Length: 550
Image (cartoon, rainbow, N blue to C red):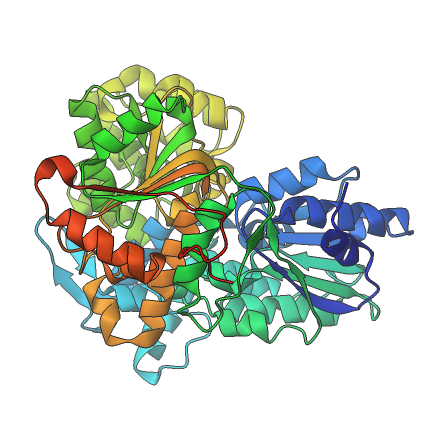
């Protein structure tokens, strides 16, 4: 059964429109039913394109659809459009390594020596060298692109750059749906516009997103682009995830932003609290409320806090899992990268470091490297380079002879890549993917990683002055507004119980979540002895309730 808002979005005849979808408002169901309706109205499934922000969202939408539509992330769609056995997509790690090499070669002074490794200026890493408008970086851009071309490689931005210059791929499309459109950057938006202009003249476009959940400004995402995508706006304003007790503080917080439209709830029964004790106590309290461990998530503002919380729970013997991004690929990655591109200067550099080889040996070619590594049991490297071994056979051989060199198990790699050729496997590895939370453990992750997820119980630690929001964001209104949206995303992951943890210096966000009477009481209670350092808020449904935002 659809709501009236959902029905309006599914059956509309508007050629272009924005769907402003609040958290937990049935966005995925609406998108999939819209696609089904378009097919049942006479459109072929392959003429419908759904672009999603994550692989998981793309798979969920396709699984819910009754017909085999074309869908995936922006990069996956572009890779499919450009698919060629002679082209490999390099990872962000390889891209940064190549950027470092090109910066040194061209004399761009953006490379500095860190504690144990060379580092490159992160602002340079965010430059799109495929559409470079900075004359100071033009030589760097030319070398970067030519090196990729020689080695038959392309980076993430290059995928979008090349796909936005194709027309035949998109010409038969009749309907385009862009999910999480509020996190689109200018390059991606240009691609979307190119796809629409290359498609059927009557092609419709549906842009789904929520300005309140735009949290990727540091990736150059621009919520103002989303607002300009269409003049026609529809909305999904009722959350089926969050009870009113949890939406109330979330709404109070986000109303301090210009895009702070209120999200409604048609049910009650949730629990929200701000407390000054530790994360272990917060998890134990949720367990005491009969919330199972795997239904609890601890959402952190930074990766360093994820590590700290994980250590605290482990010491308390609470089973937990920290979902962390892979910051540094292991030896297996660089070995396979070398197998795929043995003459790439950046890969040569990182491969040599990983295996502690002299650069002169690695630049001598695969045969010389294979001879040097033969003493360590890694043989037949030349076969890996030539592609005569399947991916499964390559990994099987490597792990059989050098099992201690790699973090992951043989079964892990074989299960993921069995049967793939080396270059194909590295490309699949390089495309962004999300880790699935395990069962039977408490989940610890950054707030950004929690996007699109929901949990029975949510704990948000570290909401203290200078930490969340970050002190640096206080200097710029746009950054402070994004920090507020990050907090809003965290609050709206909770289905039943939400606990915000602070200390004697609570964040300004805590004050924004609470109405004045409760804030004053919280401040008084937080200054008392340890036994009374807990302040529980329960939202009343009575008229005049200080929680009310309406």
